Length: 540
Ligand SMILES: [Zn+2]
Image (cartoon, rainbow, N blue to C red; front, side, top):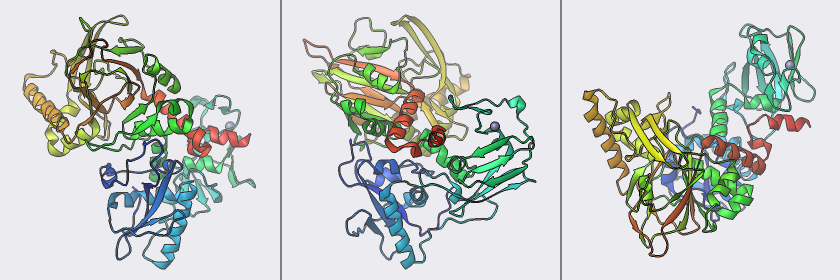
């Protein structure tokens, strides 16, 4: 956890212009920030800044709370104070930000710090401990003041110019030697075999070279050279690891309810412009749902969008699938009836992570779409009914799906309704009442508690204050996180001449996140890419 003095400054974001393709938080919305999880670390926020966001500096130190513009505008005073949670976490992130706007803001912070000594802007450094100052910083070049080997602990200590310290185990350094004998440069892959790694290695000597790299000689006289930036990003401190993981996986989510303004982007821009694609994918990850507008109202568009990512996920319903009222429907979606809130495909043990739904023809009457934030609902359940939460995160429920489409299928799966990771954080919702099997593999005494728990969860998600309702128009594509959102639709009546028609496709999160990292690198340069390429490219 980031150490945080009670009167620290923080930098906030606010849309000055309408946010680029409406994919950023809708406005200066206090709820937006306070609804985030307590461990919120806005690591990726600065990427919004280059897409038209304004920066604010927020002070809790003055007699009255102040918010300042940090752009060219005059300081401006506001009287509201609504950012207590963010205040604790934002500042260290923005200190590491490459954005010129943020740099300007931070300079202004420092000026204020001189006037008000109670502002605490300096990370606390404790000798021989890794500090906040050792966290990875995306852009500014980092130089080393000093490097030495702590032979007893078998750790290499780097003291950075900014005062931070990082520690690196000898074994890890030897394992990750970047020389051509140890690393296949063309694949950025390790050649060194585990069997050849001395996991108890010592270190003969270590020094900072003239060009600011770390040079190590190992006992067998093999030599390794490490780039300062490369090391900095791989610092083992809690703060640095947390920042790196957030940069790689973007696991922080913005929780929402019925008040959500669904982020929007332009379909053509997303296809052709990396900046637009980045904004789309960031919002898809953070918010879980984005509307793309302006696609041609004809089949084939979800496949084009999947091509933009990489490839789509084939299932038994085909490469893409047509949601229409069909006789002898092999799925409840292929009727004109109401669909209660569900995730798609819990009958698979690994349900598709992302779903695209393209409206080609809308109904004459009804057919409105509904969505809830399943993670947010799970958090509410945990708060209101911890027993029900425990039940749904522990019991495995049987799902089934049988029929013929792409080919014949007879699926069975066992999934927890609410999947959590080893730390209890919700990672996936698996719930579709239509495909929940009549086979229920539970001892008798757990059956009624299971129904009670599931009903409690469903009742929360059906509360009007939690459900976002929207009507798709021909040419709209809704893209959403199928591991997180539950979606549904109201019953409908088609036009006499044209059936209501949506075309859908699935993708997986691995492929979507891969594209996100690539467009992020294209837009923000290597500095924002955490990959090894940045290191290699600079050498070329
Ligand atoms: Zn080597």
